[in-house]
Image (cartoon, rainbow, N blue to C red; front, side, top):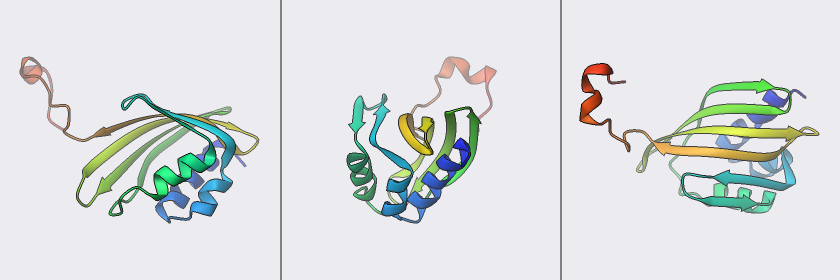
Length: 125
């Protein structure tokens, strides 16, 4: 299976809340880092539990997946009914058909307002 397909399966199975299926695409010794919150998740089971226990009301929309060799980048939008819209840029390492490592940058849309000094140089998205 292509490395990009492994990551696409991760997001599809997460959207379906198919936690056994998510576990199938993760290496047992998975390590995922979240630099924005300063956290490191060690082990497939911990990553599964964090995602399975996240408060319901969310969905996943994959915006893009780009792969080169064992390295895969995904950009995903995660709207939540009460917590707003989040975006995540994820950098994955795939080995032997499973995700072995990741670094994810989660942000909430609009949580970092543009400074006034840039107003004349940018357009609002």
